[in-house]
Image (cartoon, rainbow, N blue to C red; front, top):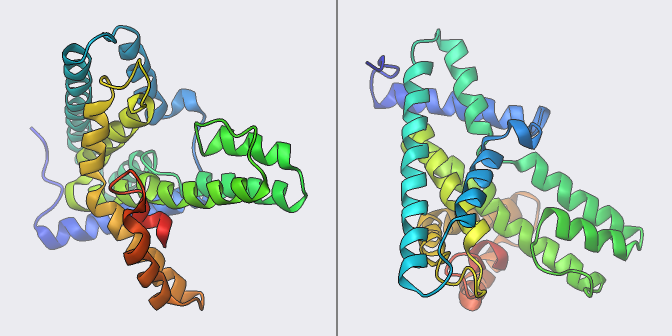
Length: 266
């Protein structure tokens, strides 16, 4: 049986607030472990192995395979998250906070995103366009960057940072807040599945369709929350929050994705 960790909604909220704060502190001070120790990398490896055995011809079989992989994988990861919460609940409270925060930290990476953007900025300021292109393709985008000029690299960096702020920071923390570790881990699996399979090419068009649509649904609220937070942040640093809100309303729908345009426009 799983021990009761929280006595009520207030205690649960207090627990999650402490864990979230600790996870953010861990991310700022320590960052991410090497990939061989990172649960998200393990998810990616599992999805990659499944992709090797997936049907890629036709529509129905690839679509069904992708749907089962995304939903089944997310459910399995959520179940593992629930098991971890049960195990952690037997620990003394300070240790339980630290253990849960350590796992939560693996679902997001503010420090990694900040470092990637800073390295690209440094290359651009130094007029080192080849390095900036390479860093952009290594850290932030999957498309070819070899022909981008400096303004295009800069724009791609800003757009990617905005989108990754939603997908890689706000969304997992949002789901942790409302559903604990199981929800945060399930979201991270869905997002990783979309990132690896959600391409419009012959191999992935139907295989990645269900993961992409599920990821769209999962990010509906986090993307809009991210845009609102960016508008608030603009006001805090002395920028024009009202103009940010106006541009958000004007430009949010200009991307093919139902979500990416929201944080990108602000």
